[in-house]
Amino acid sequence: MFRIRSAATLGAVALLGVTVLAGCSSDSESTSTETTSEENTQMLPPVIIEVGQTEATAKVGDNLDIIVEDIAGTTVSTDNPEVVELTQAKEEGGALFNPGGKALAPGTAVITLTLPDMTESTITLTVTE
Image 1 (cartoon, helix red, strand yellow):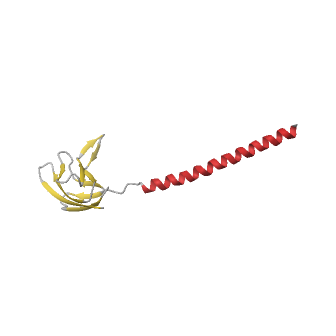
Image 2 (cartoon, helix red, strand yellow; image 1 turned 135 degrees about the horizontal axis):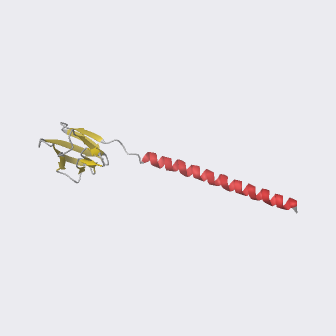
Image 3 (cartoon, helix red, strand yellow; image 1 turned 120 degrees about the vertical axis):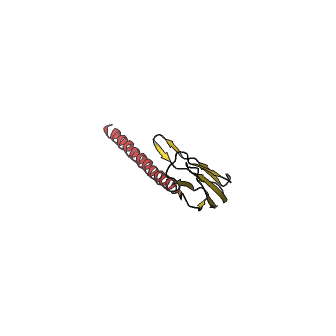
């Protein structure tokens, strides 16, 4: 009778070991798949636009960062909101954010940048596929 219990216990331990190994192998496969998915969804750096720049090019989905010295009172606008969505400069939680935006669709948009001293400049943004 002792031999039967030992054999049953040994069989149960072996089955448990196989189950654990099977679980580990599927976890590592899903982890590598998740890593691959993360690598494919990483954000690209924004398209940097500086004051005085008159032209810029971006691809659909690119983010824009318009570098200004003083964000207080700086505003941006566009003649073509279907091509580019703009965000205003702001201070949030002690952090300063330049004006910027996102390229939405192929085409051309003129971005008007108005600085705190009311100086205006325009940037012609060309968005490609």
